[in-house]
Amino acid sequence: AAGVIQSPRHLIKEKRETATLKCYPIPRHDTVYWYQQGPGQDPQFLISFYEKMQSDKGSIPDRFSAQQFSDYHSELNMSSLELGDSALYFCASSLGRGEGYEQYFGPGTRLTVT
Amino acid sequence: GIQVEQSPPDLILQEGANSTLRCNFSDSVNNLQWFHQNPWGQLINLFYIPSGTKQNGRLSATTVATERYSLLYISSSQTTDSGVYFCAVNKAAGNKLTFGGGTRVLVKP
Image (cartoon, rainbow over all chains, first blue to last red):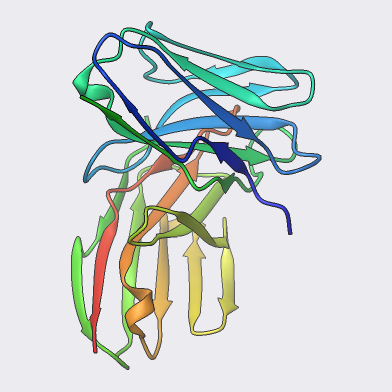
């Protein structure tokens, strides 16, 4: 079965650089979520989109922005990178919006900021 | 926001042993999922279980929504079961998941 695809899988950037993470949801899934997992921590919700509109927002820094495109893929743009942005970034997708729909996670993008 | 607590934080098992992991949550939820994060960092869906009991091979889970807890059972553990097990819930519309702190499991051969 098709899964959530994330690219790149690994990314190394220097401080103050920018990064773009991409997410391709499971076919027919219309809701995309982004999570950030720091070393030794649990995943924290950043932002979500339903039908190309932002549907919820968590603790996402102002330096980050995201969008969902017409083909439902999503991109997370990160600017002025800081050492603390080093983390595993997950994208998840689900079918439908609202309470009670199972989320499926991609393999993650490991971002290292030096 | 909703609080999710998992216990124990760490668990060391001998291969072949059985174990129970617990997830407590502070409010009523509409979705509860169990994940296994393997040593490579991948989050694997184990169960979608807002209520009731489910089984998948050596793993099973039970959620008692009225008492706000869920249990994950691992039977006849194998070294490949090592990793971190997360419980995650959502309550509010928009469906963002709130994760517990995880249980780190190490299965020794």
